[in-house]
Image 1 (cartoon, rainbow, N blue to C red):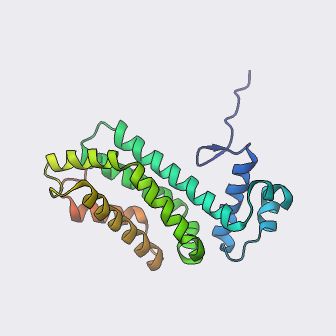
Image 2 (cartoon, one colour; image 1 turned 180 degrees about the vertical axis):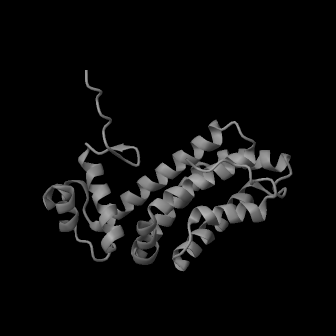
Image 3 (cartoon, rainbow, N blue to C red; image 1 turned 90 degrees about the horizontal axis):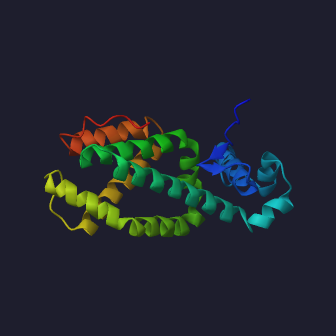
Length: 208
């Protein structure tokens, strides 16, 4: 008996679902042509459906972009939480493993990230709202990690909220630097920051 093939996925979502067919097609086109120069008709053609079908799911191109960003945020969140909570390594190494996994995902989607930062200005307030919401929803996990790191004297004894803001600022700064320089990889940037900030973080295994 022939083995049943796994369904194709996009960010772990089943591509037999038309919604995710639209989102994947749109992300690829935004990365290739830019958000500004991609039309809903282009997305429909790439996804193999009519514009009318697209509009059953979304009212505008902006809404498509925001849903793509939301799905990427959720994928990254689940990846980070999984690696932080299920790893057997010490807390600092688990943090590095999670950071490398996120960096690898963004490296693999570099063109889309560039478009998102450089070409989607009108959508940024809503993207920022999504980011703040996810950060707030996962603050308890971050605080537990920070407590372990402070116990091991790996980080300063600051309030959890302050530490989360510092980490977030470093991550956003590294991301923007990577986009603006248009060279190197985000994985190498993560390696650099961990080597610079933490003396014992060099033994984490690479992101898979």
